[in-house]
Amino acid sequence: MAKIIGIDYGTRRCGIAETDDLQIIASALTTVPTNEIFKFLDDYCAKNSVEAAVIGLPVRMSGELNEVEEDILKFIKKFSNKHPKIRIERINEAFTSKLAMQTMIQSGANKKKRREKGNLDKISATLILQQYLENQRNILRNERR
Image (tube, rainbow, N blue to C red; front, top):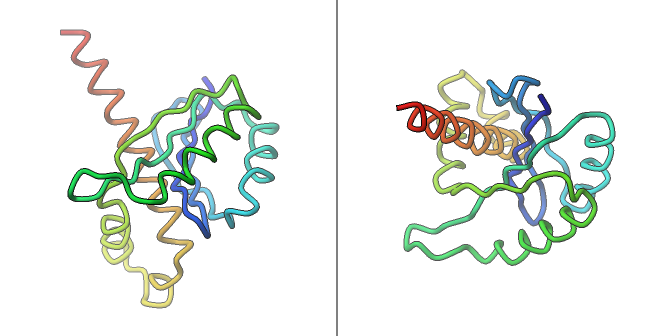
């Protein structure tokens, strides 16, 4: 099987997560400055078999999309042109930053590590990817019934 990557896209930084080859577990990979995201992804995709990219959908509490969605759509278009065989999936990323912070606190990360925005971004990407994997498992369970 090929890997699935998760991307928490931001205007300054992008958090990146990946699955194992069996697509069971999502793990934090890195944080990349947004202006270097394509260099990173091109290198990553050249070295790894990637089936899909799960990209956060920034939905506000009101149900409206956050203003960063316009930038995300431009990113997706360019990514799809560069890597047409990689399927793009979207998943609601509401509350991932809060959950990422809670995860860091529960794991015992000190204040210095919690203040590093890059840590928050890659954990958010992991949460986005893990939610996608869980949704896929639920779909499979329902189909088997």
